[in-house]
Length: 514
Image (cartoon, rainbow, N blue to C red; front, side, top):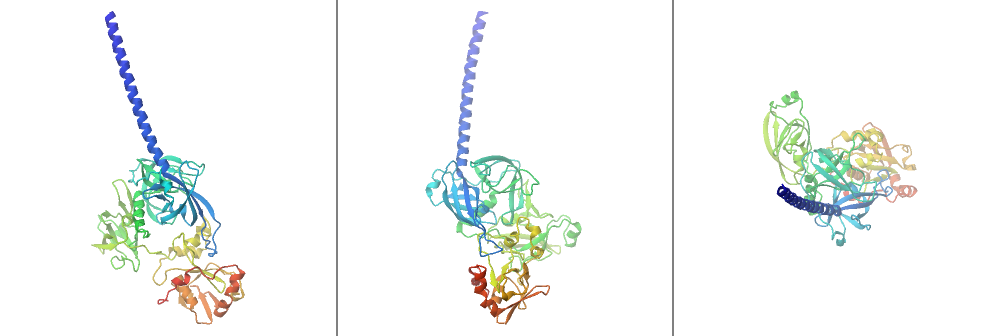
């Protein structure tokens, strides 16, 4: 019995030794893993910088002036080549930019290297190379699978230090980018995104898998944020190599869905065929001599187009067929399969640079000086979204109806742009029109107004006694030409306006086709 007890004691002692050894190994393993993760996290944190911007946007109501400068902040990530990847809206209209490293009280002056307002992405740098000495450049990774967890790094409001939040990738599809109104692929996550997060990285496995760009607006949803995905980031980085922003291509047609069985039959499709109906082909585009209105687009490259205009980009993800075009760079071939009156055709169209605007109202622009002309004390400007948005955050309700309606009209070679008599600077030469404002000019001395350049040419080269401006309803504004020229300097001095026209306006003045 005593011998048995001794044997049990020996076994117990050996078991304790084994257990102690296992605990030591486990503890060491946990320490090494935690230390490694902590080191990786620290490297990512050090690569995320805070960006301070002072911006003064043009005032499109008085286009010779700037609005009051405002200060804002955003986030960015160091990538290869001593570049910092951020949002375009973080540095838009910037007059002064600074970058600040994590846990560093000092700020360094930065400058813009490349910007794509369309993709809401920008590259900035700090000329002092010492800024990047202890920073690790992060690589661009691949888009995670839906329902995978990602981390969002940035400097949101509510504090000065770096913030890290977690979220789930819940959706990937085409979205309207709030900054410039473009329609590109975007990822949706449920991580908290607030002002200041903009430009910060979405991280998975130590790599950048997105750039935070906007949160859900309108207060109808909580913790819904959107990021620019890797395919769009890589497109912009490739585009930046020659320092020329060519943007995303457009092959020059517009479509509508074909969900209606009756519409499909009317356009000659079999019951097992799917596609979208071409409703507009823009003259001068690469598709103009290839695709016709009432054709049905069946396939783009290897992507089958569904009746709702969607394509499969992975087994689990569908998005708008426009993404198949966005994958290309300018000059690359795009194969289009379409049905015309029941017969299938295949053609190759070259990806071309998108026109400045396919509608009568150009999209919002940044980092540009507004165009204007003051003639006879009347301020004339081209109509664009910058002007419409000058009516405030509720511009869709408060801007003049005539200007808003123009957003639904296509442009054409005969009518590319609208010209607006925005306001009248009261003077003797414009008596009778002092209360006219926001008035679209359709004819100048009987000639249809094609665009702002042609309008300027007609005014500058007028040989008649008067300039007669008219709209489609027949209302006229008549300005004596010689009086307008004589009173110009007096009017400018009275209203403290530095010039009667925007810089370089006459450089764009048309010559042969006016």
